[in-house]
Length: 177
Image: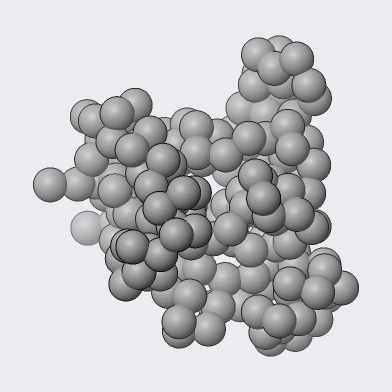
């Protein structure tokens, strides 16, 4: 059995994209956290201040024999707007930027090609950053599985639920049972 692969994405609030990725078959774990910044072990409050350089991200552990990296990119770009600079919906700041943090040269090559191809399908420029992952910091425990623990939260209903529904509709053949 091959070890799980890791992918890291940021596209707005991590609660929303975490919940969307948990719908997929072949995903063994999704962890909310922070990456791409300069402060060691940042807190949520520090990241929200916009001064640490971190983005809210998810780290996805997946079985590449069930779901491959290209398919993860498909889902990632389906559940957020890659043309919004430093924001997603009501969430504004560099911590909500669109970013793919690659773990190896194959991921970098695939992400770069995906962004380049995607740029032609939007009127506005795609602003998704593609950068190497340096350090991933796991978010505080209350952020993990947030949608699952708080399905009636108004923010989750308004922002996470539509992303989950989009994954269920668009990627029905890739859903976990």
